[in-house]
Image (cartoon, rainbow, N blue to C red; front, top):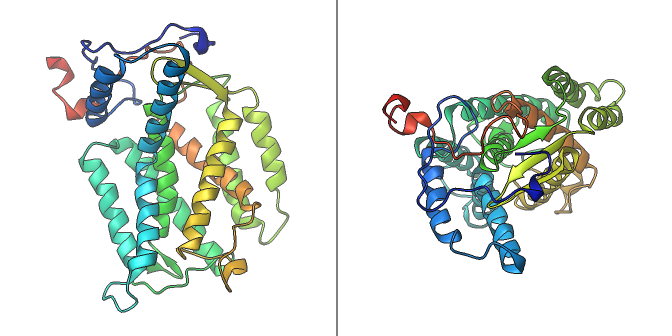
Length: 326
């Protein structure tokens, strides 16, 4: 793949092509996703490639892949909304405890069904812990509250809250391989790790000293200014500035947060007397927090250049026959 993927010929598997099995790279389709991809190609390969119809097909596949990448977060948000409407105050199990057990079951189910890889789950777990630690501190500082009771909690923080951070990590990990993302002018890994560490520290330190978030925004712009993400949707490759991608994901999370606070999963002080839209200022916080998640994911899915490896569909080796038998 060249640095200008839009001008490339379509790159995809034909209906009769067999997927290649590679055990090396960490970014791959799981066995379940590979089967779904092959079945989709058998249908989509018969549809028009050019013109308005071709563009609509590409856009539809983009939306479907985004929805698939959001699977864990979408299920968690659906559980939050549904429990808000239908959970009885007299139920034996508290709503927050139900959300914790349900989120845990969904996460384990995704692993069992090979919808996430074990390496991704480890990074998601790390972000789960990172988010929960921040939750404990922030609720103690009065930044937001969880208004309902629960048994599974640490301090004032119900344990389901960590899964909301895990949902962000899950989305970024899944979208990285589902869209087979590659990068040009990606900064040295150590600079991104230092940036994410500084962001995380500032979430705590700004309560006691100067808030340097604007300096962190500037540092983010400097580090990622030249970085472009290249991704494959269906037949064609596309690209966009990575900073724009960060902003779009943060905006999506901000919308989801509005739905979650409307469902009283948690509330901000400004919402204590009735729901109100979350301040647009929170968009910046999610932008920075999302970068932490992205950097954690890059520790598993190391950023690769467009020409670094062929864009072949890869199977999860542990889900299929051993590579030596392929």
